[in-house]
Image (spheres, rainbow, N blue to C red):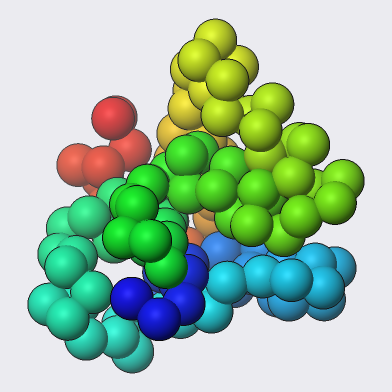
Length: 127
């Protein structure tokens, strides 16, 4: 992989708002692409993985999803963001971040910028 990539749900207004925040606030950020507009096979991802959580593919081939992808994005951004990312990736904190990530993912249609279209399918809400 020539560059690091963050793959998100382009059909979700909340997710789109989050990546726009990254683009505006982080001077250094990975290439950001909606999974719906990506060649998932070329990225080594499945639609199911992308529907479940944001995905990180590092230039070094390292992969991460959900809270780990967010942490990797923060580390990649450098400076103060890197400190937050490293903290978020610490074992105990990462577990708590995972709980928070799943809570937000299940309720993203209720989050600022979210719309009813952001709602996960009923089968995904209980995860």
